[in-house]
Image (tube, rainbow, N blue to C red; front, side, top):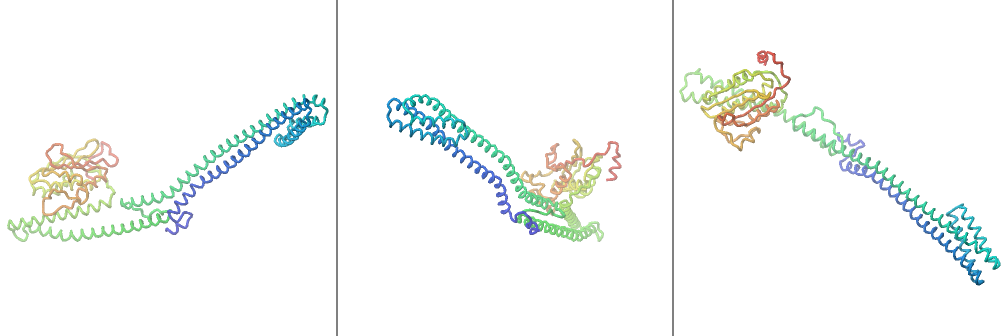
Length: 493
């Protein structure tokens, strides 16, 4: 099965699945980081280029402004001093102005200010070959030239500001895109995390459910086919093998108990029949000492039979949890239990007090009788000779209460927490030659729990009993109408 599952698209092993999960979860994040890096790199490059161009173009516009001022100053000085050197400087400034103006024209494009400045510059350059009077008359043109140059500077600044605004808008767009990509890719990563977590947890949950089923005895006829990494699939196969093996061992144990109970009961029945014949004097009268020994053998064989029945009851209870709910008379059930133990009660001269009034109830009669039988058996076994035994039955808050109490040695404090554990035997000594099996109270407790009830050791309300066990059982199933015939219901039980 592991090979069939591992040939699918799923990874073959748990490390591969974890590695694939890591890669798949990181992939959207890597895409996001890559996109962010590319966009930020583009934006950074754009900002760098724009910054350089802005500096160059602004500096060029300022240089043009300075050149216009220097040209005007040289022309005015020449008009006063008539120094040819000043005229040479004027021509150099004009040529430099034209060169820079041509470069600035690439920024402004077809802006009319370029044509205006070129025309004005051509007219001002013509002054270098004009007469002194023409130069003096042309000085007034420098005012318009300076104004247009300042206007060129302002337009250059406007273009630079527009570029800065464009970069800012681009930065906002990049930010919006990054947020949008994050809003998409981060949920994708979370979804992948949940998906791969489910892929890993699902087979583990299935294994846990199978383990709980094996532990509780609720094994599936056909286990759910486990899908996942090969390690977990192999573990599931091992659990299936273990479950099968446990079922085989359980069947062997059941068979062994059945055979042993039969093998033990057959000679035990013969022993009890023989001791009964001897005690009745069928083969002749017995001497008092002989009769005492025969009665001891009969009592011991009866206790041995009780131990065998308790062992079988415990084993049956562990594997048969189906309830057989019926309506019965609680007082009649108690009387049946006391009749079963009347010889032991007479031999110990115990005074029995029990509730004889009719008390119809609906529960699992077999399990309830088993509980009361175990409690009465323990009371007889551990109670004092010539002591008292109480079996109280009553209903309170729609719950059935059955109390079995006796005089004698109280249960030690160290044993109270372990009374209902299987095969636990406390410090109290059992009366008789046979030692108890330690499963009677465990069977009783499990029988109560199977009916949603409780069995506990409590203090006797009257203060007369040294030991008092209280059984509390609910009414199982729907209640019958008040006018139902209780007598008929009890007879049907």
